[in-house]
Image 1 (tube, helix red, strand yellow):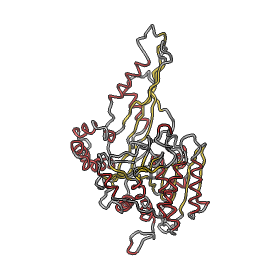
Image 2 (spheres, one colour):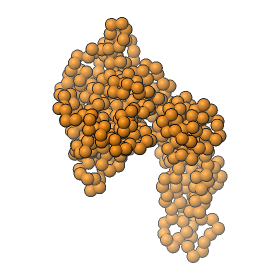
Image 3 (cartoon, helix red, strand yellow):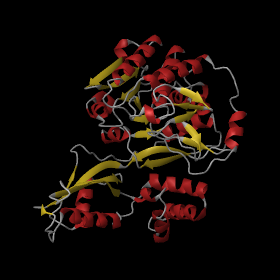
Image 4 (cartoon, one colour):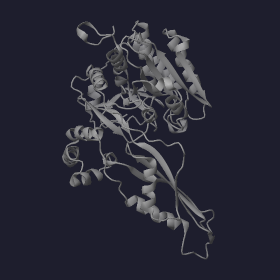
Length: 477
């Protein structure tokens, strides 16, 4: 989830003190919290076998809310599983289905490192704390409880709505690939909304910053660069050495900068950021948005760690292995180089660029997997942008929605590659400059924002799949 880049001061505490108070929970809020607690308790880390159990729990809750068993599928893959839930519409709009994405798995968490059991939800100091509270069990919970509430109130969408939950987004994405490429019925959807991307932030004074709707992701690809050598005894150094050869190659990669690239999405995000950050970087972002060939602006942006990656493809060394004995010359040395590739650039093109940059045909440069795939950008849609803006303005009347590109990877990249335009539209918010620490110790989410976001998807669904009310506005009540 994207957070702003401003420091939140002590006024946060005062803001919260006057916000929720000790108000009693509504029945819907209490049910959401009950389910949230249950979801966090499932240890859905790689190899645990807990994800199918979590899917079974969700299926039970959905059936109790009125969903037919025939409309709920659990798709086991080895020790994990994917899940599909179809909310059948009346077809009156003639529109294709909408997919709603989330992932049930979480990254591993060592209980000895945490302040408490990471798989027991704790509320403390205004926060919910536990592995997955933000990434992405809030998305799973929020979408599920929205479907349940809509079903119970008798809402009939004008088109089919489909929950698509993956089970290994944090690792191999095998379930994601099955859902995106192995299910033609899902690939026929008009578009997808992803709870694991997008997101908002507010200042300590309660002002909402621009909401960044993810419309593109960089392609994730990793290459191994290997130098080989006959080796020998360390007492007789050779003129060539696998570790030195590899080191020289890495220094060349470090010094290389891929060509600057931009698109409508990255330029609109730069323009929105420019107004918020101010200073020299703000001026540079605005200048880049106006003219992406502006050399002075590019130089300033490249020097800023927060924004440099927006300018195009990046590759960086992340792991090293070499040699086999302390008293032997290395027979091989390998570096892992991770690349985040700008939308529209092919993976093989990046590999060839690395070959040219290294300039040593004796080194082997190859992807460390055979299933990396490029992902196109999704052109922003007026209906999605307007519906998202309307849903968000119920909380923050002045908020604006800005299409953006993520440097990280989500399930969305595979659905885009399968031909389904995908937009990050998560309902989570946080204070600007305050980290949720997703993937880290004591992952947390503000309770205030947890409850405030529970109507987010309901508003979106009624706007995008509700029957027209009097006067032609969308409603669905």
